[in-house]
Amino acid sequence: MEITDQQWKEPDGRQLLACFLHAQDEDRRRLARQLHDTTVQALTALRLKLGLLLDSQLANLESTGEKLLRDSIRLTELCADQIRTLTNMLHSPILDELGLVGALHEHVDFFTRQSGIKVKLELMPGIDRLPAEVELALFRILQECLTNIHRHSGSRTASVRLERNLDEVRLEVRDSGSGMCLAVSEPGSGPGAGKTGIGIASMRQRTSQLGGRLEVSSCPGNTVVRTIIPLETTGNGRNRPTPTC
View 1 (tube, rainbow, N blue to C red):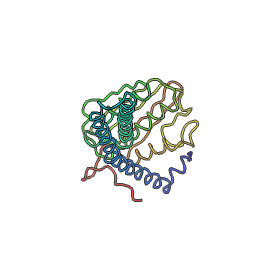
View 2: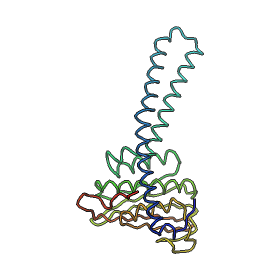
View 3: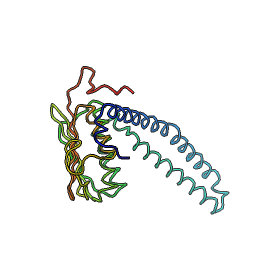
View 4: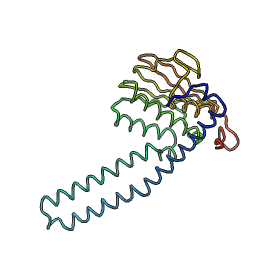
């Protein structure tokens, strides 16, 4: 899906994308909870029952029957593990429980195992819990960046750096792949600007909703996506209100 930067800059386009991202986050959270509370629990119960059946009938089973039961148990465990992985991709419970730092560690480890791309994670000292919407925005941006690296860049390495000071938090994702054939710091500037996929547009929208900015620079061998979000909050601890959809 390609949409011009000018369309995203128009008020209706910004509001539409903000509502889409908000609905997407809520759907991910709801689906992850449902999968965990229903499907994973059902598979766990099934695995226990198969184990009890195997233990109770082991003396009466022929080798073929025993093998079929053991294979069924392994398949049940595999399905449960795959659904747990999916729920973590949809919505990381670590993000709610331990915050952005814990979620970054978990996701980078998971991404490295799944993709084979080696990711260096640098977390500067002094990063504590951030406002919930800031943590969610940065986590989603990280997911989008790493997904793009895996699908498009061809890079076998990447680096992630997170730092904050009193006024702002910065997330930088860098890779050494083929590049995006553009060099932009703001929408509509630089060669090749004017059309972006919804991934870049969604990252910009998440950032701008919080009063921040997204900087992207890319050439073969060096692509950098940098997100800067100010930490000026209102009295209720939120940077920006939830979009009205």
